[in-house]
Length: 343
Length: 243
Image 1: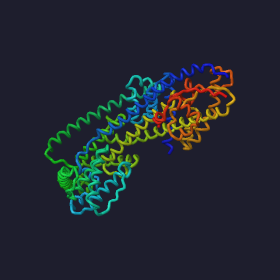
Image 2 (image 1 turned 90 degrees about the vertical axis):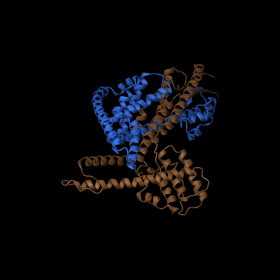
Image 3 (image 1 turned 120 degrees about the horizontal axis):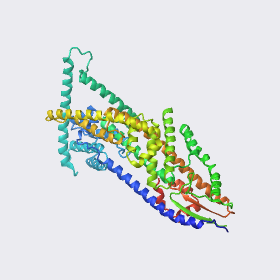
Image 4 (image 1 turned 30 degrees about the vertical axis):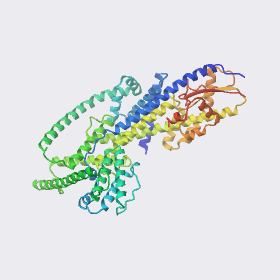
């Protein structure tokens, strides 16, 4: 029964490596925790929307008008809320609930429960944008229903609703004024050749601005196409929100992947000759796993012989030193242990 | 789609080169150091593969070389490119100054305008503008070198940056997957070898790789290797970290 010389040393190394590995595991855990808190903190200082009616700006004009003018119809708030959720919520996992919005309001209790769910939801959301929507929709539905049933936020919601209605009226008036002014300006200059539509001015500054705006809008469209889930969203701020989310998630992914790669390999310059061949092939083919596996096989016996020569093993023993000077993917990160196979 | 795959190939080549340079310098690096080196070389490679045509790639390199310990690494990876980059960055600094002075002028004009129309009620458009402005600020913080860009070029840089980030993530994922697979393969081969060579005496040291995270792979462990896992006090929870 021969034992490999140096097995004692090996077990000693094993103990040290265990400590090292536990330290590494601790470090990994710390890194992960740090990255998680970073994520949460980044979500928090997002700009607050402030006003509820800007969420309504996402709605098409007629629906906003409907909301204003039809306090009696109980259908509209339900449908509108359904629409808002459908617009925003399709791609976001958290917001997709199956929302059976029947035209007639089922009952007071159901409505209040739904509204309560929205408000809970609003609290749970990271992005303030979407939180303004449910609170707004719940406000509207509650106000229009004019219920005295117990909901904790009822009195304050009624006040907020009145303010939001006033703001909407002001906004409408302001827009009307602006368009009129633009129309007047176009008629003043006689030598202008550009045929301006009502609401679009024609002096050089505005033209330049209009061209600039169009360029920016074209770029925004490209970005919308690139970022998944953005094409349905209307409104620059929301699209920018999605873009920011996407960039942040990609950067986080890079961090996690580099962590993972660092964990897998104890040395950075891992054996890539065979892997590169597989990679460059797979990048064009996409036939990834099949190519990697056969390429790894020839390494194994080669390594065995290398180890033998390196350690001057005279017996026919497979001794694979995993970790000290590895030239392939065997790595030592987590646990080293030895075992003797006795017959 | 030839352009993305060539970018990926270029990126991979340069990343591997960078990793080799990193690895040759220090012998035993801790986990965090390794992670930082990997990430740094990945970023530098990404910027290099873009050939420094875009603003963000130059800014990325500039940010990376601000810290002294990274600077040497960056210089080694880039080689002669580094000097060329330094010269071009001086030119871009002048552009930054111009952009900044333009911004100061704009800001003072808007302040005057706002003061004159302070009594006007808040319009939806101004609120929308404020929202958009806040978000562009955030985006400027995210994209490297974004602070000294106007909104229009910021969008273009973002487009490019997202595209290259995606390619980078893709390549890194494939590499990680490949290394996982290869480790699994080797584990399996050792297990097989042990079964075959029962007549020989041998001691071998293997290790449970950190990339053994998925349950499928854990299930593939036969009883002996599972015994090793238990003996080495590596619980399932710790393995799952790497998922």
